[in-house]
Length: 234
Ligand code: ATP
Image 1: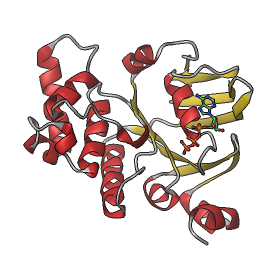
Image 2: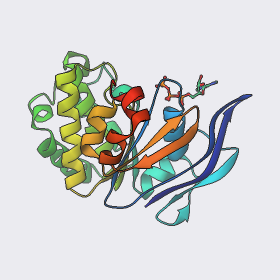
Image 3: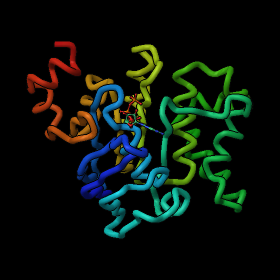
Image 4: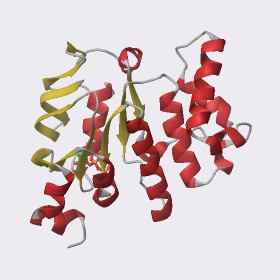
């Protein structure tokens, strides 16, 4: 469904990605693990179209989308949950969700998609008129995922959802990701939190200094000495 081919991405003279190629099938959840500054956010931004590559391509549904805008990619079925799940803190839950469907003018369609999201996240339904900054950190992250789900995507790109969350909430957010995945949404997530990420994905890659250095199933990666040392605390 998603294929990144030989991507080089640079910010001026700082090259953030070197020859990165990866794929996500339609029924898959895939993680990219990496430390601070490894290039994880750059990878997600390039996939959604916030960042242009110097070389390489992005394919979605076997079509080259490398030069499409982010909103054109959203129309084709991709959606983004930004780093740390940023939401509009001064807006209500409903207003945040409405913004996730900003291209949709048909209010009836928006309303029915919002009900679908509320079914996924009953805690948000109860708080639909609450201003986002009064939600807990975990609920704000759920709202960010819910907002991305408003465009009814087939592929979710998730940038470090666990950032700044207490461990118990991290676990809850990953359970949610697992639920979405069971419902047939393909997922590409980038994470420093390897332990939780490996529990919900089918495959994972390791990104170091802008290069993919390993790929495997969660079991294979958990057994890898380098992964153990760098990402799983020994
Ligand atoms: P983090 O977990 O800290 O967000 P990351 O793995 O997401 O890290 P990126 O944010 O993709 O990493 O950054 C990769 C490299 O590109 C880093 O060296 C970073 O300093 C650099 N970089 C990122 N954004 C910019 C920018 N806008 N201008 C210049 N350099 C940048």
